[in-house]
Image (cartoon, rainbow, N blue to C red):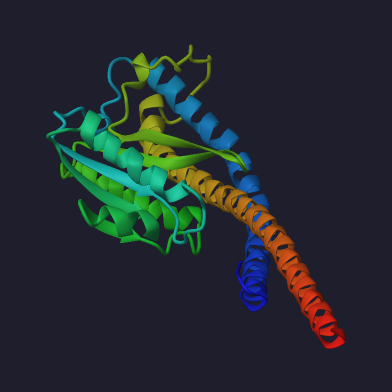
Length: 288
């Protein structure tokens, strides 16, 4: 059995770790509230914008003729892996890497697959075995639509210039604090919206200047909003995952501390008993 000093040292170490994980849990909980409010208020707007684009495109005669809808033979694929800049969030980042590797092995085997990483953690892993053409870790320091629009425009340019035939977003979608859903969401090219199952009968509106012109201007805005929603989803998911991970870590540290306290008390009781036995034995020896 370990001596009392060693057990006391371990108890102090575990207690210190428990204080850190508990503090991190509270910080993540506070950040989660803000991030959750941001994504829950953004989703209705983004969904309505997509619905509007689908309705308008479905009401046009023929293809909408946008550069963003051009279907090409898929030889070069760009995966946009959205992770976090910090760890201690359970499987939040590793699940992104696994999803990317699954896409390469199952969907794009034999194709040229490159990466743009948004977040440090996925980049640190993916860059070892894959080509990462760009890594942006600053986006989460100031996650605004304007900063997001710069990245989205870069992605749109890479597609329209023919650098890549397909662009896919890989990110965690926020469901609740304990659950994140891995999404592999096509970004470009846009599907033929007129054939989309989500398209509905267009309402009887008067359009100015014209449906085609509105769709032409709406597509870039919709793509920028799609990326922004993915980033907001990932941000909320990160804080939820970290809060859950730190909650479990705190519970485990508490359990370990209690076990060590019990072990310490047993060792201390055994030490006291041995001392009493030695005293009694010494007294009997003197009396004899």
